[in-house]
Length: 518
Image (cartoon, rainbow, N blue to C red; front, top):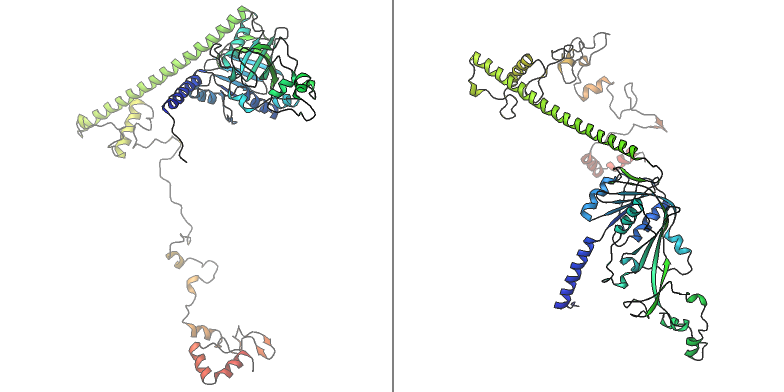
């Protein structure tokens, strides 16, 4: 089946939509949620729940290895457009960092509840995948209190979620809500995550039941008016008690039956988790390496802060001074090396001019890699360098020269190992025939054994008996008695051709006798 092609207007609409999506994606903030160090399974699940909260502008399947460091995430964050880090750990609990230059907020997680525990505690939970296709709506409460750390904390939370334009906002894209409430007494931040639902108001429970997708059971009713007027067979829990706190007038048509524009509707929130109770510990510049801007437990006076800044500046200056001295030392060593090399070359020129060997133009650099001089000349040049400069030359200055040995080491080559008399290398055939080998204890030598003259000589030396003959002193393979026969008493095998002639001339009887069957 051939898929129908898009019309011209549809193509333009799709291109415009994709262009707007790319522009929107590049302008909204993105977040990495991961952990550092060893954590338990509950904290691992909390990290997964926080990734669900930050969807769709977060890395849902981010893999973290043990050998990864914070610099690895910072290096990857730039090309991917990541703007914030949410880091969980066992000691510092959680950190919120703004890339690339900070600041970093350190929180202590006083209490937390996972999403699965929150949903299991509800009688009717409301959670589906379509809710996480749009970013949540951020609601900040009680963050208008005076204080630098309060304002910085509110700004950090606001920048972690995309901003909204009230005049261009589509209400159908608001499916979730994140609530952050600051308690000035306990100085704790309550984190809550809700699912949002809008239902029409001003109707009876029966009409609301008809508006739902699941139609009620009216088998026991005589007329539909009983359902509309009395609402029989309906429990009180099927309709929540709405009031002025959650009833509003919709400016747009909202998804759901009965939610029309300019009509009264009730906004209902269902918690889907996770929950967290956070306490701000400190705020530092940069990615956790700058100076501390605020600390909730340690307070310092202005004089102490100035003294700390002076010590830090002194350390930085000392570091810069060490770096500058190192660079100067490297430059001086290089300059001294070049001077010594030039001095050695000039001495070589003078020496060769006096000897009349070569002219000035024929003298080449002994440290040159191409067209190197012979090893003997390089050794002379290295020796002249030692006499002129008073120190050992570098290895790459005279490549063909041998390095001078220490005063305690001998310059002679290694001597060959001397072997004892009669013990030559195994590949030396003459050593086996040596007259001194094997004569110390009077034993026979290997070469004194008499050579064999053939099979007849071997049989004669063994008593003159053949392999199959009976008795005799030299018959070693005659065998033992077995009945009235011996084991080795059969005649020798004469070959296939002889066997055929015996078979044709009555040799069958002899063959049976040979086998012991007669």
